[in-house]
Image 1 (cartoon, chains in turn green, orange):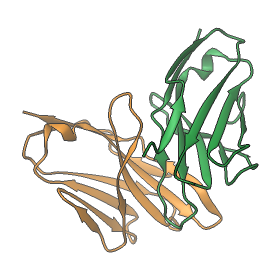
Image 2 (cartoon, helix red, strand yellow):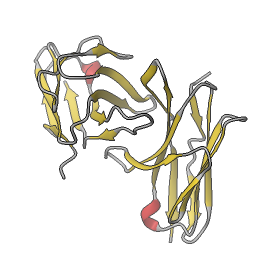
Image 3 (tube, chains in turn red, purple):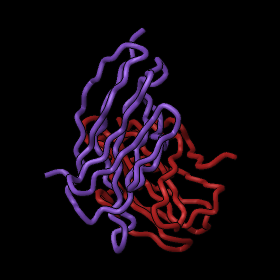
Amino acid sequence: NAGVTQTPKFRVLKTGQSMTLLCAQDMNHEYMYWYRQDPGMGLRLIHYSVGEGTTAKGEVPDGYNVSRLKKQNFLLGLESAAPSQTSVYFCASRSDSRNSPLHFGNGTRLTVT
Amino acid sequence: RKEVEQDPGPFNVPEGATVAFNCTYSNSASQSFFWYRQDCRKEPKLLMSVYSSGNEDGRFTAQLNRASQYISLLIRDSKLSDSATYLCVVNRGGYNFNKFYFGSGTKLNVKP
């Protein structure tokens, strides 16, 4: 059971480059999330989705876009990377059952130079 | 005031010790509570959900005190492999069902 899978695991970008992070879950979860984790800041929500075809902004959405064309996939895009986007990115999913927990992917470590 | 507050530690304990962490939350309407463990440079992994009546999973016991708005995690007979950062996570539920609030984590070091 793969759970939540993120690709790539590591990436180095130059300022201004673009990239897409892919998150895939095989648990048939309705809800999916993108977080970033920075030292001393904890986990912060970037964007989330409550179902196929829907997306919503989280706490720190600027500089990122997302899409959820298929229920199992949630893509996070950086159109023009900035050094401030150097971080570890975690995707998570959960079922729509009350009190269901988040299940995290193994993370993408992104460095923007 | 932060939504969720934890003592950052580190807690340095010998193998076999019992250690307890507390986490306080600010919103009395919070409905779901969780403990996650996070190893260095890895993703958070669910350790246990916390239920109103308290719950136990092997060496781990979680308690919820709604009146005082805190949850606790007790680890008995600590193992070297318990060394990690423990995150307290709270969900408000209801209209805010997609808002999860994370503590900054409590670091545990179990020494031989």
